[in-house]
Image (tube, rainbow, N blue to C red; front, top):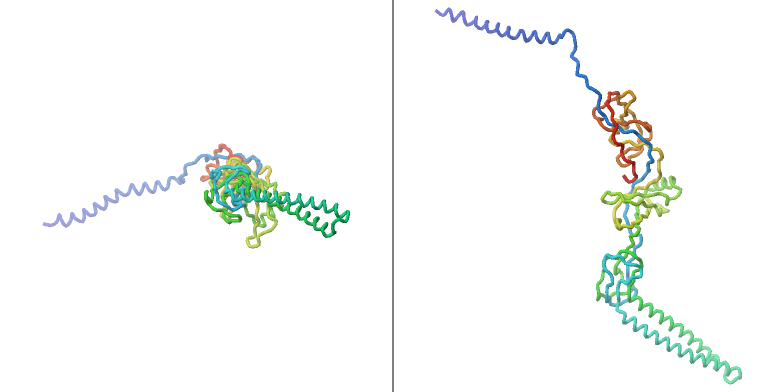
Length: 394
């Protein structure tokens, strides 16, 4: 009989379905009961005050500066050229050394100049002897004309010859002086004190008067010029800020980013504007006792236009911007919360902003822990080390 198979198979299927339902029932009840939670909502865990660091704002004297780029050049520079032609016999200096004004640099063969000098000395002796002879004749002619012993024409000829002899003597003296000068030119002397550059010629070379090539170059770098350009509008503003351009101090940042330790000052401002560029040339002077500044360097110059008294500055990292570009900072409120303050800035000096409104001396500006802050958030503030004083060259 197949009674067991017919009856048992459907029943077994229903029994399995009932068992699954019984197993799922407690899970459903748990979800329902948990969702009800007796009508109460789950609460997020509470957080404590946010740890922040702040700096106390103080008044400081802030240099107002303008930064321009420029090139350095030597205070004095002279190209050495010969003033007489000849063969170079000796070079009398070491390339790169410091020489004094009047120090001999080259020796040109002096023999031709010495021969010319000897000839001039002989010519002077002849002129002197001729003058003596003609002077005596002129005196005799004067005595004879008084007694009518010679004609008037003879007397005048004697006087004319005497006058010509005097002129010849002066010419001979001038020739002698020039010969002596040319002999002196056979030694080439340093026209200024300073560093002597590389020699362009060697002993044995022929040089001539007026040649285009300089023998060497001397540069006095005890002081250094810094030549910069400034727009017409900036130059006019500088003149309005300072009654005298020469009163404007300058700090120098060298090519490697270091600040030159000595301040300079403007010595010259062009009185005309270049029509093609709309700029004017300015020149500053810096003392260079240790020779740190070299001619030809590219530098940045900070022109200290004025000093803003009792200025307020804040670290750059404390300032944030709104989508509209407005600047803001968080300060420590009296109630122990972070207060958002909108501020106005003038410019950046080093890593700090110059604040012209929105903050006061004594405000505690938050510089650390800004990522988690929101307006009126409870905070746990602690003071951090104040930034160093602002320098125009920072």
